[in-house]
Image 1 (cartoon, rainbow, N blue to C red):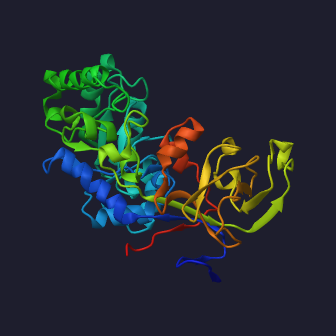
Image 2: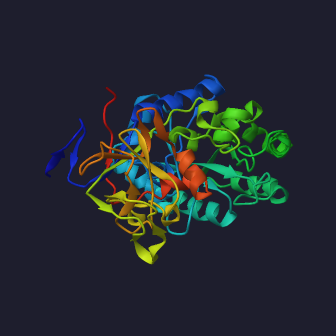
Length: 388
């Protein structure tokens, strides 16, 4: 494919909007998680949803090379992609089993969460027919109010699953609901206590010795009594605090990994009183230079950023003016003398002393950092440059 080099050292294919993912930063954040839990606790990074939109396979390869003993995905299809890409470490499937995926679980050597007896029976029946034994984690709801056996049905479910010759119970898992939000930890501590109470049941002596897990990023960073045998870091790997906006990535020691760039494709000078874009939602109040950037909501750059927020050009803030379109966004470069066609535009990342973090963009959109990066579209090329 053709490459284009313009006014800086970056060289890319001819798409003028792209992502650069700092894999070294992802690994640093993985090692931060390991430091927080200590060497006796295993860290299984979460790479579901295509590595939170940043590229599951290259991220997984970097994490495995850095020592990750296993990885967590959401769906069987996500695990299949990693297996096809040469990832051989254990893969844990959060969403567990849906009807018809049992053969894939066995063929791909996956370890699913199980939270219904019907799913356990279906997997067991196929495993027995194939003379296999499949490792599974049993999911219990300790207060999330989402998937998992209820506390009332859990013991009886475990008893039944233990009789299934095709299933090996690897351990017990649950999920923290408020580890990222609360300051005093009351809800989280209650969930931890509930998990411990479940594990003290006489019927669960074997499970109590299993590879049990509770902690997500919030648990890893703020609740050491939730760490158990293994933990599941997610958003902290990708450069944001799980407790944002209460806490920040800088507070947590998390390294930014997402850099989103574009280039100016046109600059026009317009007079005061000129309306811009769809709906004429913005009108210039003075003679202005308006730059057009080839990024829009078709790329995952939210339309909610219309007339809100800014990009960075030559280390200077360039405010968004008018509505974000599917393919184009307009910014005001009147006060940026170095701006010209081809100039580098930083949508996320650092430029000089300025920075736009995924946390900052989340605040503009009144959402969470997870959604910012997960929504970046597939038509935006991803690159993984070596750290210089």
